[in-house]
Image (tube, rainbow, N blue to C red; front, side):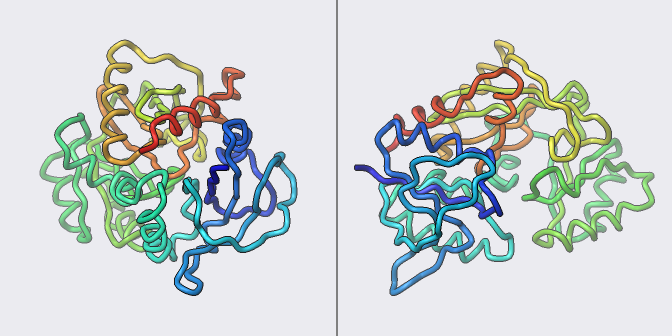
Length: 307
């Protein structure tokens, strides 16, 4: 029997997240499934191991977790569905790199490191992305806003859940204060991107797995500038236009070549806003909007395209 480890962030009780929906689909494909907690990754007698629930056959939302046990990572596949605590990211990433030398890691360490940040997307010239700057110096970024004019989005380079995202312009008096807040709360860098008016029509989260487009929904900002659901944005069912579909199919192939088997892409056509490679949200939302669970399609597409 093939075995897979789902690495997740530990919670007090079982939550309705991607791992919970992937579990029955993986079992149906004949996999033995261990659910391990990413913040317990460690090196023990020269081998990488973690603690969690072994040989899981069934879980339900709200259940208490089964008894936690230690397990050496010696699986056929390791599926990373959470990064856990930010402070220990580097050590966990290095342990995952060790694991990836002998096992397939979804997504690859290259994808985790480089697609998760916005630097690679900003520097490539294949897809249309907003004008982007990043710096550790607040004066440099403030000068860009003054010289170029217009509206800008100020945010952390590798933020999550729509936190610390601000719309700014040259006549704002608190730009330096906002930048300092971002510097202290992230990696010491702040990122500046040209504001896109297209975002006012909504941003589409498109799920991609195994190099193909799975499904999508639209997010509309209820107030402010962020379309993140955790910050109060509204979700609605939507379709992709022919042009959007063609762009997303190209994106899906690009992400696969970069090691991204399962990703969530944020799109405000024709602009590529962001790629989420760590447990991209959307399956639960789409199910709630349409009554269809896309988890089996994600699992089947990923497994069908394993190297």
